[in-house]
Image (tube, rainbow, N blue to C red):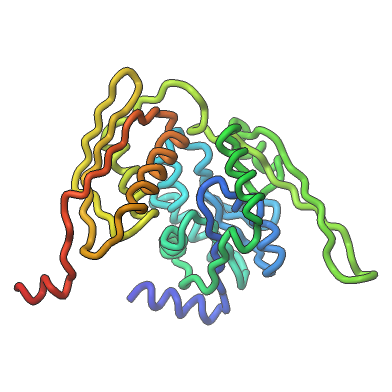
Length: 295
């Protein structure tokens, strides 16, 4: 009911929510300002920050978190004080469009709900605004350098989060037509998140399990974790996952890709080494309709 009245309130204000979707490291933050410019969007929500123009008007940066799990929670505005500050800042602003950056549609929808915004009216995939070559280049840069982009000038990051600032990028482009064309400059900050620093990382089994649950939800909502066995030896981890899947689900290619996906996420964002990751499907769930008949 609360969500219904929230949507009605924003509807009267004429607010539309856009979402730019792409996996981590594909260049969403780098292209956020260009997308916002194209659609006339004044406010961007990126990794826990509310950004208007060249300024951070509210929020906390997920880049300052020490772990990937902490970064995910910050990006989702899970801490009540963080959420409250962001919601109050948005209510104080006059705007009719807002852009949410997220790794999946589900994540974008969660952020919209946490910020008490209306339902997302338009999803924009990173593949719609960047070529495959550009995406692969961005992912290679993220993997080899561990650096991220925040779509605000370096001066703003230096003032707020000086410990993670690495560099800045200035992007020039033409706007307008014929004689009315003018050059516009967009500045972005390049940062090195604290959770990307190299070194020995100690992380609890429960935290790893939470991250695996997040990966499963992001990859395929049909997959459910029954239990996880996690063994750490000499800094390397051996993990066995027991999954429950619905009847009729194709498993061959899905399980192999899921295995690679989870290993990549765990290693890239925590610094741990996954020596082995085994996936065992130990339960096939029947259709919900079948369960009702049995009852």
